[in-house]
Length: 180
Image (cartoon, rainbow, N blue to C red):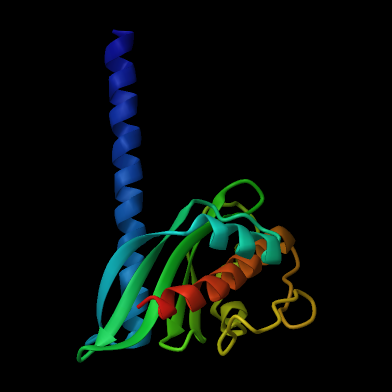
């Protein structure tokens, strides 16, 4: 009987993970369409970050990548590359925060969004007003919380974590766009 119960629990957990992944993908693709337009075409790639580049960016930003890869959507319109959307995770207080950064073809941020926030507190990083301050930033921009990036009372860990995550992707996109 216990083996049967444990098999049911495993099946429920796997279904939950798969439906969660589909929910994240659906939300991500809806966000991409809302920014680039309904006629934009995009393709998804799991991009393995080269080790030397990964370490270089982690050292500069002082935050490790969540995985050895990120998910990249290359966005085209009428056969011309108009941008990139990069999906990644950072750790909040204790749970992953899934976020999306959209760039124009030159590597300038045009939108940032929290796709999945799993913590009970600190969800202010999901507000559009807070995310709008990243528009126009790029790999050469200053991402200092309290100076160029506003902090949020009650979301200190999330603010720092997401800001560093966005900065990492701004640095990474420079290498991705050059390897078109």
